[in-house]
Amino acid sequence: MRQLRLLAEESTAPVPAGVRRRPVKDRLSALLDDGLDFAGARTGYASHHLHSFAAKFPPQLPRHFILGLTAPGDLVLDPMAGSGTTVVEAVLLGRRGVGVDLDPLAVQIGRVKTAAPPAAALGDAGRRVLTRARRLFEADGRCDELLAQRFDEPTRAFLDYWFLPTTQRELVALVTAAQDEPDPAVRRFLYLTISSIIVTKSGGVSLARDLAHSRPHRDVGKEPRSAFEQFRARLSRNLRSVTDMPSGEHALILQGDAAHLPLAGDSAHLIVTSPPYANAIDYMRAHKFSLVWLGHSIPDLSEWRARYIGAERLGGFVPPPLPPRSAGVVRALAERDGKKARILAKYFVAMGRVFGEMHRVLRPGAAAIVVVGTSTMRGLNVQTHLCLAEMSTRAGFEVVRIAERKLDRNRRMMPARFGRRGKSQIEERMYHEYVLGLLKAARRPLPRRRAGARPGTPTADRASIARTNAHRESLLD
Ligand SMILES: C[S@@+](CC[C@H](N)C(=O)[O-])C[C@H]1O[C@@H](n2cnc3c(N)ncnc32)[C@H](O)[C@@H]1O
Image (cartoon, rainbow, N blue to C red; front, side, top):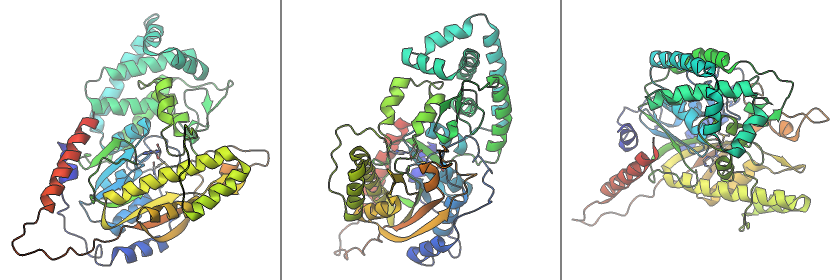
């Protein structure tokens, strides 16, 4: 019922002075003129640091636009929500937040960050799990049996390559113990706490380094610490993270494709999002380290991976005609590397579909903020921000302005891989990123009704929202 309320409710709260008084376009333009670097700002408040996530943006970024462009009760959407930063900010500011992401780990992170049960209940459950897990670990041969039952061949091979046998036993004991907790929301928090000792910025219980940057490499010299000890330490930290969150009544995180959003047309008051960068981060490469422990198999995850925007798998993709700038960049890249050029074209086409969906679900006259960096492919700067701006106009948006922001490299975790000259290509291109301010045109005034004709649109809207909600209920666990 919570989800139905979230989406069907209209905003009834009083509109604060200043918000909505000036035209959206002027406000958007002024907001883009403000400094958007947020250098040195504290980013770890509320649940924002619950779990590592590559390339999440600072919470101040969505906050800035939510405060400037929406009122309490409004619906804020992030169609590629990642770790849920926009949705967390929306609910902290009394708005309704909806996040969609394809990535199963991102969805779990977003759900826990926006709707965790009370910390006291989670703490008790965490301690129970640790006790049960230690008991399982000590029962002779029990963990080896569990490992044999739980995983198929390819997944076992993956685990044997990346995790020491003792760590595997500890982790299987932890997930088995967490599985026995009856409340699904409590279980989600516990699974995520287990995941956060695997996908970490440094350390972590696998043999991989750089997992949080999504560029794992095996380090045989690494001596991973005890998963039980890591779980205990991380539990107290994660309990502190969720203490400040509101009840979660006004947040909804869905697994889905940004090119097919499960939302009614004209329903969102604001979109703040950051798509994958062209050719930059392969989320599944790192997330599978956790997802295998949460019930996914390696073959199943490989299938999934091909569907991400920016994925390198081309299948039978034949590029359709692109608008001039994007077509020019793809042509120039094709002279250096034909395959990379098709990957880039596929990225532009996918983003074109996402812009189409964003345009459909936004209310007329509302804004979308898209944060993206540019990429260097085969030595060519592909000017992603300008090409995406072009794709967005094709979907019907007006580009109000493109602002530039400096990245705080200590905060926004980007893939770090240093080459011979000290910097990788990825490293070089990621000191700046761009903030696109897009606007959906306001609706033209309706033609005057004939005397006696009955207005039908509100009822039709309600029916479509009810249908969407019913569909969404079936997606939720
Ligand atoms: C740069 S991250 C977003 C980070 C987010 N702003 C945050 O603060 O955590 C981009 C996200 O797009 C998601 N993504 C990729 N392809 C997608 C698709 N087709 N539909 C929805 N999400 C997708 C990825 O899984 C990833 O979580």
